[in-house]
Image 1 (spheres, one colour):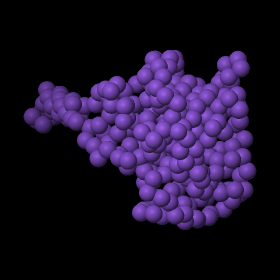
Image 2 (cartoon, one colour):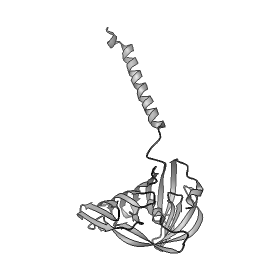
Image 3 (cartoon, one colour):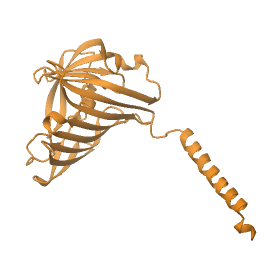
Image 4 (spheres, one colour):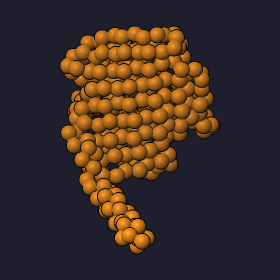
Length: 264
C-alpha cells in the first residue's frame, strides 16, 4: 500500500482540514461586527383595548451602524385583516430616510411592492403590483421628514424631529405609503403634515419589561411610548380603533445603551 493511500494519512489530512474549518469559524465568531454598533430584535402583540383579544403580531430587527445611521427590518402579521407587511427602512444619523422597500399583502391578496430612494430633496418611488401595474412617482421632500410604511416598529422615528424645548403640538412632515386594501392603488406615497405632541416622560411596563419612556401623541389619535436614542416603540395605543401594540419580547446585542442617552 502506498503512503498516499494510508488510512492514517487520510485521517490525518481530514483532521487537519476540520481543525482549519474550526479555527476559521472561531475567528469569524470573535471578529468584531464592523457594520453593527448595536442591535435590537423584538416582537409586538396587537390586541383589542376592550378585552385583549389578539389581532396580530410584528417582529423587527433594529440596527445602529458605525456612521450613526439606523436600519429596521419589519414583518407585520395583521391576521385579523388578512394582511402581511414586509418592510425595510434605512435612515441617516439624523433619522432622515435614505431608502425603503415594502411589500404588502391585504385580505390575503398581494397588493404589490414599493421601492423608495431619497437623494437630496427628491424622493423617487417605484411600485409594482398585479392589479396596479408598474408606476413611478417623484416627490419633493424637505430636509426633515419621516417615512410611514405602517409597521409600528418605525413609528418612534416620526418623533425624531420634534423640538422638546419648544413643547406643544408641532407640525412635522410625513411621507405616508399607501398600504390600504384597494389593490388597484400602487404602493406609492404622499407627503402629509403630521401633528406631534410630547406628553412627558413615563415609566411603562409591558411584557418585555419596564422602560423609562417618552410619551408622544401623533395626529391627535395615536399615543406612543418611545424608549432610548434608537427611538424604540414600547407601547402604542389607538383608542379610536380600539387597538394597542405592546412589546412582548426584546433582545439586545452590541454596545450597551445607557438610560441617560434617551434624554436627547
